[in-house]
Image 1 (cartoon, one colour):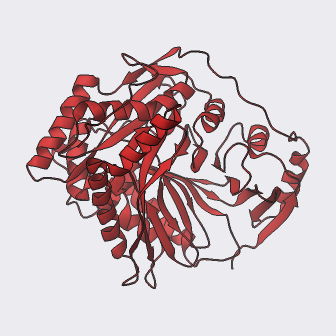
Image 2 (cartoon, helix red, strand yellow):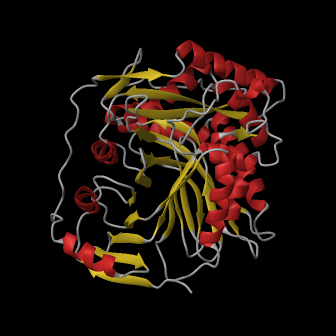
Image 3 (tube, one colour):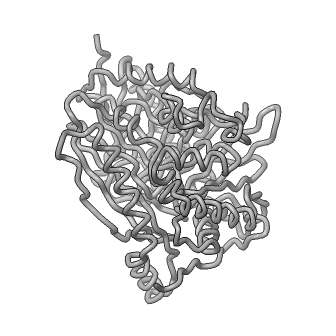
Length: 474
């Protein structure tokens, strides 16, 4: 017998004010339409946590996910598993046949430096959300939704009276970076890795490799305060705040890894290609135009589009995989990005979880061919990627999915008995045979800079405003 779904309308409140009043602590997932949104929806949701790390735990958790999502129901939107699947979930899915060499039993040359950190965030962390508040920004309505016991509706209605009306106000902004941030790879080390990637490409081991690095800020971090700054300084189409256990993921992601609707329509929109924005309209327009015409960026994007097409073909109805958008330049607060979109329709009997199994880890964060790229990068990067370059989002009880790439994100870890609190920022870029190593270095600096500013931090040995990357004109 299925549990019933109960709904109750509530007076309009700003989602940020609601999170401040009702979710300052404890597990929560906030899918955020952004400050001052006039369209779209935000969702704040709660539920029991499902976490797993390592092959054995992940196998058990994945079986539980399949059971939770079995038998889609059309009355439960937006309830269902929500949170993150870290990059380790992707490598586990890719290596369940033990052919990649990044999982259990891999040779020491591959796993060197990848020993598990007992304090690291869980590979998989999801709330099996059974309670949610749905904010429709266009209609300015709020609906409380609960699965099962409807007493929560009365409790949240009573708490609603204590949620302030109106804009919650802007959080305090740091006047200047005051916290040091330690880069995993200094300039020379990252440049050497770029050259190593290019050597592998020249040798025929890969076509493109997404090389990543991490910058860490030690010390306690107020996750919600930092996210409030981030959502204003770096508005993004897939913004989110997720806190599960001792870890919070503060997301300003521009990239949709996967969308599946309740009828089986699928889309994936990989991003490959970046240029910085400029306050000068003429310079800004030139940067966007140059991105859309750059031979290296177009080739890199096209290789990942082909990889996504191949991934989706394995779960799609024959003849339905199509490139709906190729080489579109989209502009965000800090960068222009080159975006393509691949669409498909699920084959009969296939589910959103099947698409995740087939397409994760995302090609835009691995390279091509995917298996060899993952193997090479695992050996060279020197540490697990953790949440970064995984996905954050929602798997619906109605069969839908909305998962964004965990990029342009801050991972906050609260202190343990073994170490202080810390926050980390991942950044990466696609390396091809025609990459200019110094330009690739400046690109990862650019991608990390806005996130470090939200943390009131600056990387050691780097300016808080990285140099503008430029490419030679062909």
